[in-house]
Image (cartoon, rainbow, N blue to C red):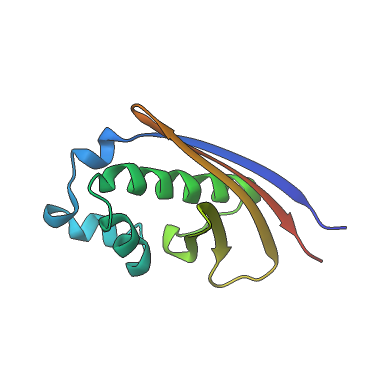
Length: 115
């Protein structure tokens, strides 16, 4: 059996409201993949979704306890459930949960490393 890990992260949504995408594209491109940006921009309040995806990426890093560039972590959704995968490493599978309420977005990620 492989190694398991857990990570959690909480983000203030206003961090992203104060830096709207149209005026801060360079910042967003350092954190999010193009398809993640496109997903978030579909929503009127995109800051909620950017904050959630950022929390997912940070929780993922914590769950495997390794340095990763945020662009190595891909987040998506299936039936409203978050999906996480590493672009350059297939040794991990993830279970993720994401929620946002009022001023916060929070994510929990459980990782399993295959041998």
